[in-house]
Length: 221
Length: 120
Ligand SMILES: Nc1nc2c(ncn2[C@@H]2O[C@H](COP(=O)(O)OP(=O)(O)OP(=O)(O)O)[C@@H](O)[C@H]2O)c(=O)[nH]1
Ligand SMILES: [Mg+2]
Ligand SMILES: [Zn+2]
Image 1 (cartoon, chains in turn green, cyan):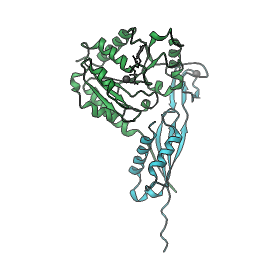
Image 2 (cartoon, chains in turn purple, cyan):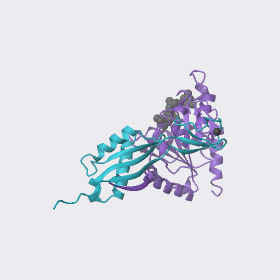
Image 3 (spheres, protein in one colour):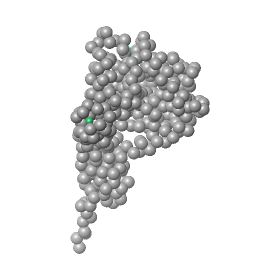
């Protein structure tokens, strides 16, 4: 027997494309977030509220990822922003190459903020870099406060946590403080917002932060 | 889950390192799998067997090495195996920790059967 020692990252092909995406984003001074959550936590709703709040002051483009249908892209298109739907046909996450191909549909010079809504899945998207500046993970109050402890992988990789559906706290057995504490045990560096997409509570704070991030990276536009 | 596409990536990497006429000699393919690599070991092995069946790699198999989630505490300098994914130091309670391992997904090495001498 002979042994070849190789030490190669299995996902290096994805990482290479992600690096190219990141270079492209830097070149166009584009701030890019990758929105992740379990199915139905409110990613598209948060995006709708964000577009309502920031449209006009920031030029936003959206990439939607779903296993099937273009429903989410239709919801976003109502805000008259450029949007591309990626249908993964069973795929449980977006990959950098899919995002790279989708970028051809945008005039990146005319975009300040790109939001990528990943497939609703709290496991797989964690390990696929898309070239984004950061992952934003959404957890809603109806999912059980132990979510961060059950799915630590995603929380290791995220920079921001949004605790959504806080309007439902009186009706479900949830304590947002517990969700936050659990998440911080996994990743103490998380920046946290609490939001409701029905009452819009917390949306202005989230949007102002997003705007400040976009500006910081983009003094010249 | 995406173990099938992970298995395809592994096959591609093997092809990049082993000449075509030696693919039949590949045996154990060493892969490091971190607790938080997002990959389920059984499912990855099954996927690999499925896609290499009836190919020159059919006699090869994955030798998975599970890598624990380890954090190093910057306050008390201990290294802790926290396979529950918590980064908080379980010894002193500090949040100032660094993730040392547990997220890797890497092809480590490829074992090849030596070429048999033709009988004269
Ligand atoms: N009460 C309440 N309902 C919400 C809130 N945010 C979202 N919802 C509802 O939750 C459901 C799912 O919301 P979506 O925005 O489609 O969730 P999603 O994460 O985009 O779902 P997928 O893309 O399918 O993973 C919808 O019925 C929303 O109206 C909220 O803050 N409060
Ligand atoms: Mg959605
Ligand atoms: Zn410690």
